[in-house]
Image 1 (cartoon, rainbow, N blue to C red):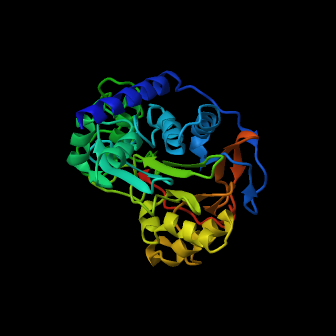
Image 2 (image 1 turned 180 degrees about the vertical axis):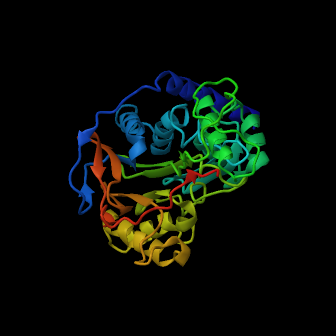
Image 3 (image 1 turned 60 degrees about the vertical axis):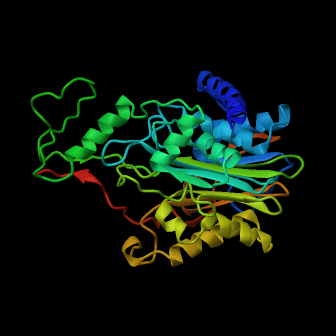
Length: 376
C-alpha cells in the first residue's frame, strides 16, 4: 500500500500543482446550435454542465494531445472548478452547511475497467473527485463518507485545508441572520472582513439570501470508444450536516457503461435519486434512444416521481434539474426541466456552450419560492 500510495501522490501532487497554477485557463466559448436532436461528433468528445466549459476543454486537450485516460482527463477538468475559490458550488469556497462547514461529495466511473469510487460529506479536502478516484483505485470499496472519507484522504496524502473562504463565510452569516425573528444574530450588508457595525439593516428591509445546488458533471469518450464519468459538488447550501445528494451516488449523479454511454446530472439531487437518473438515461440509450431523447424521458420520469408539495398546480417542478449524456459513438445530448440551461461540449470544433432541450419554456416557469430575510 505504501508503494502504491507514493506513486499515487507523485502523480496527484503534480496534477494538483499544475491545476492550481492554471486556474485562470479559459476555453473559447462559441455560439452553440439550437437545442433539438442529439448531435454526432467525431470521437473524442467531452461533455459537461455549463460550469465545466474550462474543464471540458482541458479534458479534450489531454485526451487528444497526451493520450490521457478518459477518467484522468475529466477529473483534471473538474479540478479546475474544485480549486477555484470564486466558485461557490464545488470544492474550495463552496457554500457551507447550516453549521458553516463545507462538506463535499463526488463520484466517478471508469468505463474500461467497470470500476467506480465515491465520497460523501468530505471535509477539509478541496478535490473530492480525486479522493473518489483514490477510493476506486486503492480500495475494494465504492463509497466512503464523513470522518472515514477524510481519514482515508489524509492517509493517501491529500492536503487538509480550510475550504470556507471569506466570501462564503459572509454569505453563511447573512443566512444565519435570517433564521428567525428572535435569534441573536446581527445582520449587515457590509462586505468587510472585520466586526459588524453597531447598526444592522432596518428590519423591514428584506435581504435576499443566496442558495445554490451547483454541481459539475463531466463525461468523455476517446477515439477508441472508451468512456468515463465524474460528478462533484459542495451540495445544497445551508444543508443539514451530513446531507448527501445525488452526486456521490453511482447511478444517480453519474453513471457509465462502456458498451453504451455515460450520463450525469445537476440540480435537485433529492428528486434525481428516486429515479436513478443517470443509470436510467444509459438504459434508455441502450434501448436505442438518442442522448437527447433519453435525457428528456428521464426528466419526465423525475417529474412523475415528485411529491405534490414540490410541484405547482399544473404539475411543473418547483426546482431545477438538468441531465447530460454521451453515447459511445460520439453522440451527445442533454435536457433541462426549464428553458435557459446550456451544455458544455468539446470536440474537433472546439469547446462551446450549446442550448439544452427543455420540457417547459421560460414563460411556463412557475414562481419559485423566494428566500428573503424578513425580521420584523
